[in-house]
Length: 253
Image (cartoon, rainbow, N blue to C red):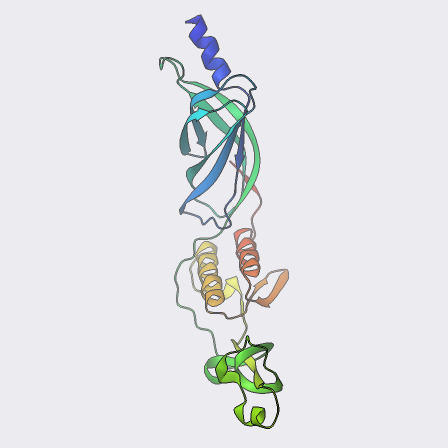
């Protein structure tokens, strides 16, 4: 019993836990979060390691000495906001499965939990300068009005070649057209459909994802901040982060 106790105690020592946080975590949705466990022992492997964190578990059969193993935890956060994960449990029934020994593993990770994107009825006017609420952009595209004539470089589509003008010169000429983009929209969570703040934030998250997916610039009006419209993925994550932390302090798990 003494030998098994010592072996079990050594088995769960010097294990370092790290999380690889995903880009998107939504309240109420189960998310697979990658995890890495490193065995810092120089001479001993570890066996039958069970990692426990925030209600999720992952079994790692073998960790070689000085090695690292990757796994994933299925976690679900019920509330939006910044959740701080400070401690995990490293457990094992090694070596003879009579006792399960556990020890804490210190973490210092913050997970931003976005509001659940609840589908809702959104009425946004499309009174732009073009059809369907579209308006000319300042970037080059393959539709819209002619901006200028330039020399064909080989990367432009054949339909953009200006054949009549090319016939007058010794080289092909192409039409550079203005791109069209949807009219920008700014979301104000206080004006979104919903009976509670959480419902309106969920509707706002749905609207952000919907408009960015459609290529429509979207911004956010908060009580003390205005985020101007854009369509990039980093901008979308910034908007969702602002909704996640809307009128809320940091939490700890």
